[in-house]
Figure 1: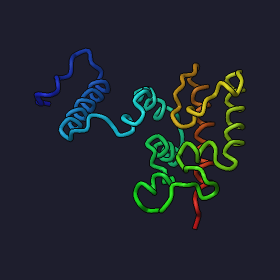
Figure 2 (figure 1 turned 30 degrees about the horizontal axis):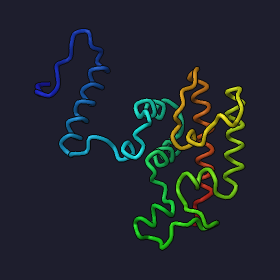
Figure 3 (figure 1 turned 180 degrees about the vertical axis):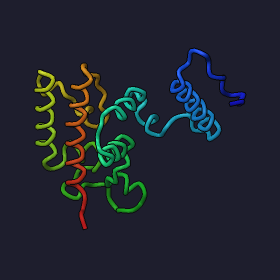
Figure 4 (figure 1 turned 120 degrees about the horizontal axis):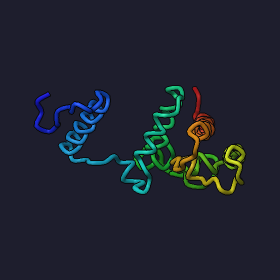
Amino acid sequence: MESPYATARGNSEHPKANKKRLYTDILTIIRAAAGCPELHVQKLWPNIDWVRKWKFFNDVPVPDNTKCIRYQVIHDLIPTNVRLNRMNMIPSDACRRCIKTDTLEYRLIACCEGRRIRHYSETLIASMLRTIPARITDDWILHQQFNIWPHKRHRAILCVIDKTVIFRIQQQMNLT
């Protein structure tokens, strides 16, 4: 209530807007004190509109496990061979099924039957948008950098992408 870094709530300010502003101010102060003003993923892909991305991340009503996998894909936390090789946990960064480098993009889009699954997803999304599949780029699966109106259609496309990613991630897991 009496912090020198936050202004008092105005008469016309809604309580939720005030709370959001205070949380944003506190987050800015904590990040400045820690010396890391932006997330690692924001440094990796600086050309992505992260405000819009996080808005749609929280906007789509999906189960928690789907949000968890989407968060892991956004932050590149999936244990690909490239990532495991960087941590010196495996000797090579090559895919187990083929010789190519096992990046997240390769694992989701190109490895084994990933091309067929990607083509099917692109065809489904293109039919929802009434366009051709060639206009749906690979970047949609990893970064979801698009803005479709109305919001119901946007959410439906995000659901298709989520189901595709979850299917590909679960296919790669070794179940015990």
